[in-house]
Length: 177
Image (cartoon, rainbow, N blue to C red):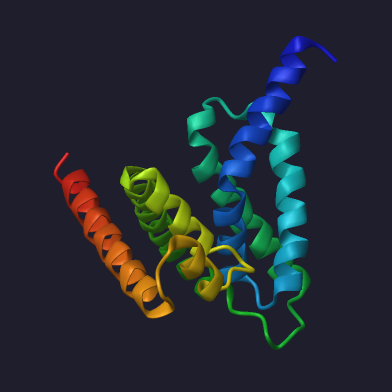
């Protein structure tokens, strides 16, 4: 494998992983079940990998990947046309167009939230992240913070409100830039 091939693999993996969750959510909205979305995503991933060398600007990956996903969902729909649960192609195209706009908005919100979280002091950010771990128990996180459970919930509410205000300010500023 040449150094250029290694770099192309690295570039693909970097942008694919960065966009995979949004792409999967997009596909999920276009097909009826999670299993169907998994099937479509598998096809999308193969096409993206095979055609990545043709992409001129890696910065365009997200829009390109969403386009590939839209066509893969339509192809899946054509293959499943006999199934009564399949949406009409016009409806799928309308959803696909709306979802692209919505996904851009959601990505801006996620980016703003990430920036705002980085502004929270380290100790508080650690507690916030602990509270949102999948297996977290607020009672244990509160105890570790030195607060009572009700006190921790109040603190958590204040932090969430500060983050919400920060995100809103950030999004409002970005509209004027």
